[in-house]
Length: 505
Image 1 (cartoon, rainbow, N blue to C red):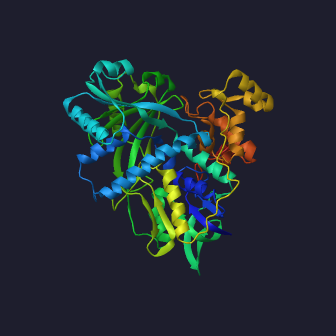
Image 2 (cartoon, rainbow, N blue to C red):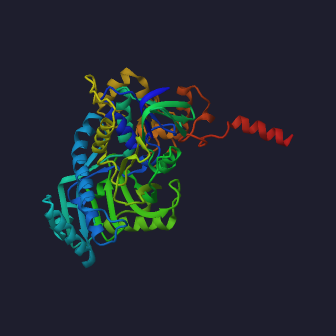
Image 3 (cartoon, helix red, strand yellow):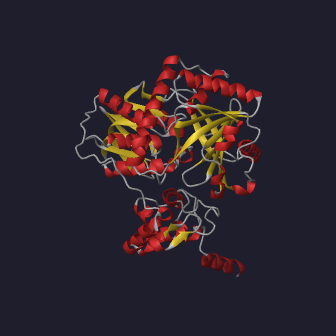
């Protein structure tokens, strides 16, 4: 097949790039080695969209630790400006793409003299950037957040540039669906295995055949070095970290009114954040790793992380924890502060695009910048007259009024059958998720929240597998959690019984 621009990687960066290019009369194809979008680093990002006082936290931390490589003032200013603009651009995007989100004010606390010094530094940076905030004493803090630690002595409060708490997979799926609506071709379960050149074109070898293209965008995140090396287009290396995250039961949501944190020192941000589903998100302790695929959890680090959360919010109990996991984080080894967005030195039609944290915030800006890079290198960019910026998400039965539920059930009786009791997810929602492209248990989960509740799919899991098998006309034993060999079932019980009888015979 042929295309003008081939995007490799169906994560947050690749899908946002695809949507931005869908505004133009350009033939674009996105390939992703996994069976769905957002299944790599993106799905386990925090997904926070923030600016204001929260941005200054990293500036304070950098001022007290030596930075590898040392970003120039120009590079720092560029990164800061991209994130400021990105924060503003996401506001209409959340509405246009119908992405569920929760806006919360932000509070930074201090409980001892050392933390107070950091808080004073944060206040100084916030004043220097003319950003709004309020200084709070203990009484004012406990009036706004009565459940935080009584050891608190001072705080800073920002209810102007609060956090948009968004689940990252919601963002990726929404952006991808809108890109597809506007003509972008998606090839999932398609791995890139090699490159060659043919005149002014590049031939990208994949597990589903060769693709002839003018431009390539390498947006594979943690795998960026591997893909770039295949194309002889790599002059960078990456540092890999993993971070631990904890999710609590929805009953803890009323313990805080906003995002609350204690700035305790480098690598020691103790934070508790409510998310739009009603749970609390606790993150994150970073540890270096040699492999971007090292996602094993560490009991000691999980204990430490939970203890840090209790330092902020003492009423939290381990009984409140419903899920925990480790996630991958990627940074440039040249300079951990940089975003890699550049043409390969040996190939002026191959763009490497690796986003460090924060990655979601500046993404709309970065996508526009890459469009400019493509245009400058000869790609004809003519805007479409019929670009549609809007996308509607699957109706979430749990969030609807009684009248809306009744109307939906009349249209499709399957919306009256609750499959996931914890999250009140119906069969109608699951079927719609499959219609939109979900072909794994995780694909259904990320689109509907089936299996994200207290029992973690203990009740609804088998039923979800059954529905996927029915709708895709496959056997239940062919249904996977997230592709590959992650089968949910190894065999049917009758097959197992037959095998046992044969062995005994």
